[in-house]
Image 1 (tube, rainbow, N blue to C red):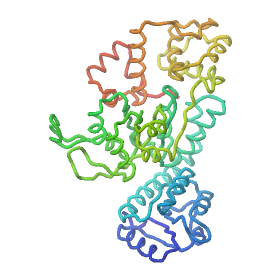
Image 2 (cartoon, rainbow, N blue to C red):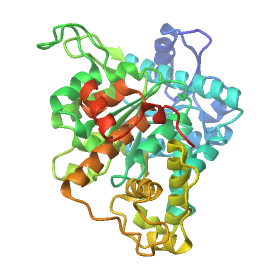
Image 3 (spheres, rainbow, N blue to C red):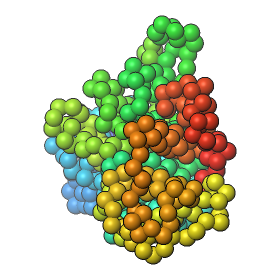
Image 4 (spheres, rainbow, N blue to C red):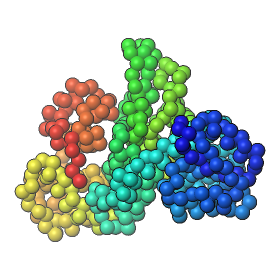
Length: 451
């Protein structure tokens, strides 16, 4: 670690200050310590390139008030709060308000150094990003373009995404299937300081449990029968970027335990190895189930649920913002027509759009997008006021449509990367090729996202 890195440490206990200075100095950090937050605040500016570590319980200005004062200077400054056992809920609440992380007393030197290192890296990325792009205010434009709708719930979702995109917090996306969680995850990455690094996605619900651990953590040679050589896992492929775990509620108890350890320590080991590897990635998770209900039923670890609950975004069901359906349908028509080179299509009538807004949309935005595809190829009549009802299909046709949807979703998420797509789907390269041919899908159509 460069000796030019700066750490401001605040604690009213002299012994703690001296111990912390020694620990961080040995790791190569330049530390300035203060007994009072008010004094430390005088040294903090928008140009400060370091990290602030502060105790919560202090006379005068406490850690929470200190955090609020720092955010008024620069909301992107990473603040690590130090808390006693009884103050953990307070620290979690502080993270929801923008704290970077917290440490629970007593903490090890290693835990302190790891959090400081992550915070400094985040600060470096944020400042570089700010210098290159001026500010992150432009991120709202991209979010507005991709997540259309003027309803209150959509405005709230967009604002929440903007706020979290400017942080390096792990994020949990909740909402029914088809509400746009995958798109939200991609936007969180693209609008973050990690935008130039890998975005790696795994759909946990479609993978056999025995494959998830190897795929996620990687493995050493001979770790299990058939493992002829070592392989990187998705955690290593996501180095410097974002790891997106879709449908985290489907994880087994054993994998939940491993994920909790990963989230807590930011370290992991490949299968068949005891050598720890530092995680350098933001973790975004999603679920279409209530983790609280699963925890209540004993199917999901409560401690992991609370860890995820620090930063959440609820993606609204389409029926909860039906007023957005007409403009959203036209938006999807533009995207779909551009992808297929079908710019010359009949525009839907006002009656047709009004009829669409009256539907329940159990499949949410995904169902609306499928209807846009049917509309473009002429299966859905554009001026049929009854046309808001999709044609009835056989079970086989519905299964084929669902399979096509899953493949399209995965190809979009990975921008046409076939290897990443067939690995996430849990099928072979040959099988993916065959299915793409059957469903008339061309990889080229997915290599560049249309905004």
